[in-house]
Length: 309
Image (cartoon, rainbow, N blue to C red; front, side):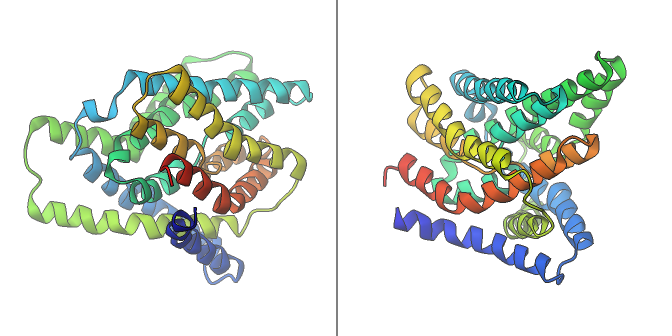
């Protein structure tokens, strides 16, 4: 356990530095917003392109893996939605809470950290988790909130959702990487060096941006936020372990990567959605803050378990 904790410590130390810089106003919210855009549109996209251009689609796509992750995450999503509705919250709030309790920060935290901790063999499974989260669950929350607001789904909302997916730089970079690999052309040396430099910036910048963004978050509705954090950090990896190790025939290394990805704290982009739609943004903010702080201990525990140490 201790060796894994020491390996994860630098990642969380950079998050802590970002948090401190944000709290001291050395790094104001405007700077955090621009750094996040740099990571999202440039650095992380370069990292994803570099990863996918060296992978075949077969190394990522695994029907058993996809079924296991969809069953684990979808089941927890449905459970959280049902429990929220039993508390008497609205359809839109129940949808946001379900998203909070079952979708992790795979893009900004999982890809940079887990590839280092679990090795290159985890790249394919982690990218699969990221793709499913974006295509299935990010689309689902948007459609459900839209339907809850208007009482029906319109072609306009579906078109907007489709355009959002097409314009997502992470998806675009992965598709471009697969396309380049499919053509079979080598990556020119200057291009490869540029991607390496930009991709190398993704990890520290993404972690620092996570910390800086947490500095402005408030901890309200602690009981609900604490439950949602418990769901994300404990119930989600437990559900992934059940599906990947017992129900579906997922290879051990891929199953370990899935479980580790499921143990990640609440995804930061859920707050953007909550704020955009005006649905419980403070509750989401509190869950992101609590789950990220608690993940300093829970993530090393899960990684130590899946790594067999």
